[in-house]
Length: 188
Image (cartoon, rainbow, N blue to C red; front, side):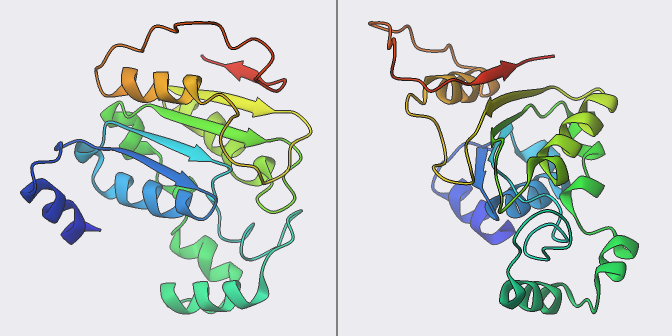
């Protein structure tokens, strides 16, 4: 990721990109951002994995993925879930650098997610991030599972990204009444 960041900077891309991670992509964006909080303008996690014991581990309410769990432990050089807790490698363990740097977070959550249960991942991050003084916005999709990601009308996500990157949200040429599922949006 550091080499990719340097490559993109060499092409003239912004020094503080906005990162998006869906599902397991949540691990990647959160871990890199926590190690480089001065290099990101914000994060958007869509049903993000924030604790590998939940997924791929399947050690809570989620389905898990035994093959991915074995690969994940091997990649991190771990032997067990206990070692995961001891070594503190999850994004949930590293929210403080992001909060201290003022990195805004957006989570879009399927509240009936059986793959990456929000209560084992993003909901824990939301509480902790707010406790640390960080800014997090949440869009909850009642009754929705892990898929589909995003929103039928992505305007709330786009507007968040624009605000986080110091740009003005776009004015809507027309209202998109009826195109959005029932969602609950929450801002501190």
